[in-house]
Amino acid sequence: MDALGYYNGTWGPLDEMTVPMNDRACFFGDGVYDAAICYKKTIYLLDNHVDRFFNSAKLLEINPGLSKEKLKAILNDMTAKVDHDEVLVYWQVSRGTARRNHVFPDGPSNLWIMIKAAAVPDLGKKVKLVTVEDTRFLHCNIKTLNLIPGVIAAQRAKEAGAHEAVFHRGNIVTECAHSNVHILKNGTFITHPADRYILKGIARGHLTRICDTIGVPVEEREFTLDELFDADEALTSSTSTFGLGVDYIDGKPVGGRDPELLEKIQNAVMADFSMATGYQKP
Image (cartoon, rainbow, N blue to C red):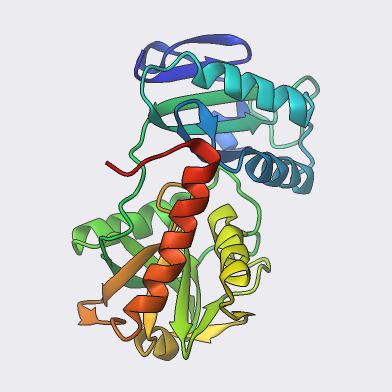
């Protein structure tokens, strides 16, 4: 089976799964989610992802209805059923099932899982970005199902032939449509603070820990569009991309001034992934 779906204990081929129309995810996007990359049945940084998932649920006052250990057991069991070595494991919990009403319903939450093929990223390839004004709400730190601004921004990026869209509030860079964004300047790794304007990415946090390990200074602070365009290197990070270098933003060349440091960080990330999962680059 190359793609798997799960809903409250029922599972099967992803494209054949159905869910109740009254699930609150359908009407309100009333839920939270997370996702992790998996190689040969080992879900990378699973504890970190599950911790963030439970934190998101707590912030939205959703009871996931199971413990962290039980969730991890279910996720590991489901990945064992998929034939691919390289997959993305996605899961979400909605607030429950009830006829449409804005107030919280009584009854249990609903657990969804989706597993599909997703290749381990090639960090040797650089990507293009575009900038988009950040018009999202003020709860970007919660990984909710409400993703319309990110969907629109991702479409703008696709139309421009770019990999991602960089959000900014005025002149301050926040994050991307579905990843975090960082810069390297004068040997320092700079990333936006983990406040309510960005999602505290697992890959973002892992990059900062990697930098600490290999002796690269880290600054968590706001940076501007001007600093982004003038960075020695720019990179994006997400669960499925780890840390991709950037070569163009809005059609203008960026970075390329400290390739040795960028490669050092990327090599350290891949080494950690290989140690955790046994991955060997083809």
